[in-house]
Amino acid sequence: MSTQNKHRGWKHALHEVIYEADTPLGKLFDIVLVILIVLSVVLVMLESVKEVDQNYHDLLFTLEWVVTVFFTFEYIARIISIKKPWHYIFSFYGIIDFVSTIPLYLSYLFAGSQVLLALRAFRLLRIFRILKLVKFLGEASQLKEAMRASRAKIVVFIYVVLILSIIMGTIMYLVESNEAGFTSIPRSIYWTIVTLTTVGYGDIAPQTNLGQFLATVIMILGYGIIAVPTGIVTVEFSKQRGRFQVDTNTQVCPNCSAEGHKDGAKYCYNCGHEL
Image (cartoon, rainbow, N blue to C red; front, side, top):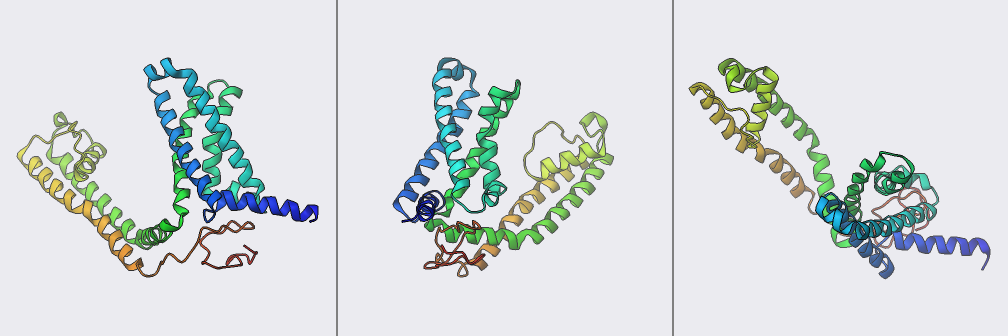
């Protein structure tokens, strides 16, 4: 076997493990990745508790370095195992991987950069990559397409809600007094949105009978409004059923990083490269 074939062979094997989950090693890698992601996020949360950090700082620090080194090697391996590294580097997950890995190194190079350590919590987003496992592929595709098909309706819905909030907020500003907290139209709109979404902080409350009546109307509208986006997405999600069968696999093209190939596919649907 020539040196070129050997080079292609180990890169292909590395690509199979890191980017795919159809092989035992690939599944094991994903399981280890999930465990380390969860561990990393737990470490970030524990470090923010002063009592825990004071008592177990050295242990937390050591574990964080172990996790960071693993993610560093993983990041480098993802780059060298594909033909066009920039497809990964500038992708959503590539940026997340970089942003969540670099803070610990920056904390040693630049004074005051310790605040960036909180960015390590972004590693939790990496867990969505594990959803590429076969048993989640169909559901993930359905949800993505349902959200995409619903975006125009949801934008219109949000636009209507904003108009309603501005109108009701302006009315409440005219009805209520400054002493009640309705000191300006923007602040009254803030109260309307808080009430409409059923959050109800209680920092502002109407005092007049008319204001309380309008608040009751807004509260009732809030219950109905909350259900609208859910209904829109649910309808679109139902339409997608049957269109997305789990006939795709976890193969990722080593040339262009395209995903979602059909079972048994030998060539990439995007660039034609051999899988």
